[in-house]
Length: 309
Figure 1 (cartoon, rainbow, N blue to C red):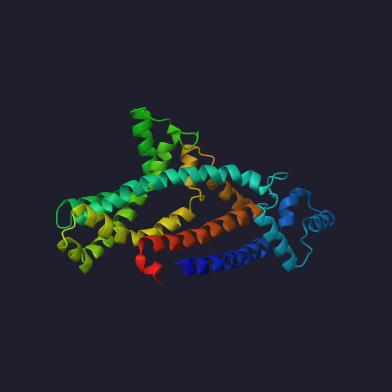
Figure 2: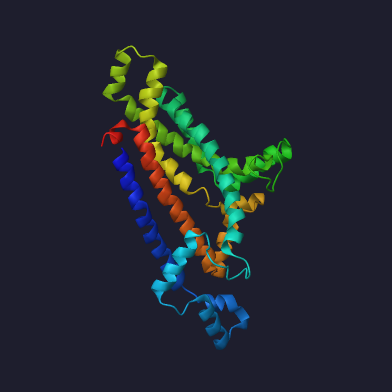
């Protein structure tokens, strides 16, 4: 197992370097001139040349890429072209943390309900409870955000007056409940169906019949032999969910007035604020690489066959 983990760790910096090259090329040679974006109506050839020299845009691509990677390692993604005088880290830092808290809360809702419901539906196959759970989860999944959000606001905020309508007060504030439910409820269907299919596949294996024939209690069989093996495919989805913790949900954040990263991402794309865009892409890609690394490590814990390789 140790050799397996070392091999995976050795590949991580290589993947991150490849990602940095792709992000740098897209940000440098993408449509639009960063100098024109930054100068705006004050653009003149003389001012543009001075700014290019100041920003190091006249250096060779290799030198620019090396400088970009070194600054990114230190957490410096440059200054925004649109919000002049403010660094990208200053702009994105608080918003990324807000989006991360919102997605953690939404992911918790999805996981708490989705996995047990999928396991329950699989164990009740052949009864009316199985299709009832699946159909209910699919119905919730089919509802778009612009229907779920107004309904939750109308019911829990306006009619029942249980939670505030909008705003942001942190992870432990009641205002996170409705937006987290808006994002998390549709995802329940994904985990329910995946867990159900995985559990049904495990239930048909011979080692389950062997475990029961040995006289093990149903609780031990469910936990040690069924649920543990059924969770292996779930690990992949969990990793991708972890990678998207810092991704904003534009519609949800707009509806509930949450100062997350969703709106700033859209505004940066339209304004061609390349430092902000490349920082978001690089952070997202880095999270995905580390998420895959965590998935591989989790496999070694859940699946004994990998530990023996």
